[in-house]
Each structure stands twice: as C-alpha cells, then as structure tokens.
Length: 232
Image (cartoon, rainbow, N blue to C red; front, side, top):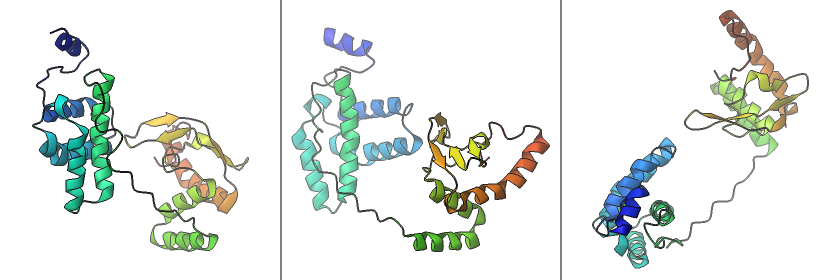
C-alpha cells in the first residue's frame, strides 16, 4: 500500500497489475506537453501500431529484455527495416527510462538497445561547381528560395537560424549577420548568439535585393524593420 501511495503522489500508477499498454498511453499523454508535434506523432504511431500490439497485455513489471529481443528478431524476420526497428524500441526505452526515473521500475529492460543503430551514410559536401549549378536552377525555378539557399550557403546558417533571422541582425556595412534566434518546429524562437560573415557568395547583394520591397512594406505599416524576421 505504501508503494502504491508513493507512486500516486509522484504522478504515476504504481499498481503492479498495470499493463504496458496502459503505461504507454499515460506516458504519451504526458509527453505531448513537451515533445515536438512530429516527435509526438511518431511516438504515437510506434505505440499504437507496434508496441501496444506486441506488449500491451503484458504487465509492466513483467516486461523483460527477452520479450523485446524476441520482438525485434521476429520483426526482422518479417522484413521490417533495421532503421525502423531501431527507432521503435528507442521509443519504448524512452518511456521505460521515465518509469525508472519516477521509481516505477527498478531498471529499463529496453536499455541497452537490442539492435545497434545502423551507421549513418557518409555525407559528401558539394563542390563549388555543384553549388553553382544548384543555385542557377533555383533562380529559374523559384527565385525567392534561391536567395534563401544562397544566403545559407554563403553564411553557413543552420536551417532553423535562417528563418529566425531578424532585420536587426543584418549588418551590411560590416558584412556580417548575427544569428541570435533559432526558429523551431513549433515556431517558437530561441535565443543564442553566433555571428556569421555575410560577404561570401555575394550574400550582401542577396540581402540588398530584399531590402527595397521589405523596407517599403514595413515603412507603410509604420513599424519599421526592428524586431521583424526576414521571412515575415
């Protein structure tokens, strides 16, 4: 009884008869408040389509490593991809890690993973000629996106930093930009500081092509450029 009451006070179900499916659904509900929408959707798919059918009726306290290993082996034999069978048990491991953190379980049977993560393919950096051909095609197909790509290539900004850039961060006379914001999947900017040069690849001229129309539009609104993102 004391164990049960302690679990309830800690925000989790300490019932020894709790099933894996019940725990995973409770875990998903709580994680929705913290995970990105894409991560939530992926975790939900793994829980509902794979983990619950495989382990759902089993008691959480009875779930062992042998059950997880048997699941991975069975799915491999059925032709499931190794990448999927790495991510799916990883979702289970994340859920069980929270159970250990909350003292619901003594250990995480899904850790270490039953299947080693497949090696990432080697990434090849474009040559200058390949980058030029890519930008030439983009300027014909979609000039605005071409400017964005040219800007990122020239400054080395990450994919979340470029759309999070503000006009206040652009310093044409200095030939630099300040990556003070990063735009996440939930469109919530985070602040950091990473100055980047803006003089390579004609990035300065790329920015100047946008100063006229953007500045004119913002001046009509009476708000100026301060605090506005380049992509707004």
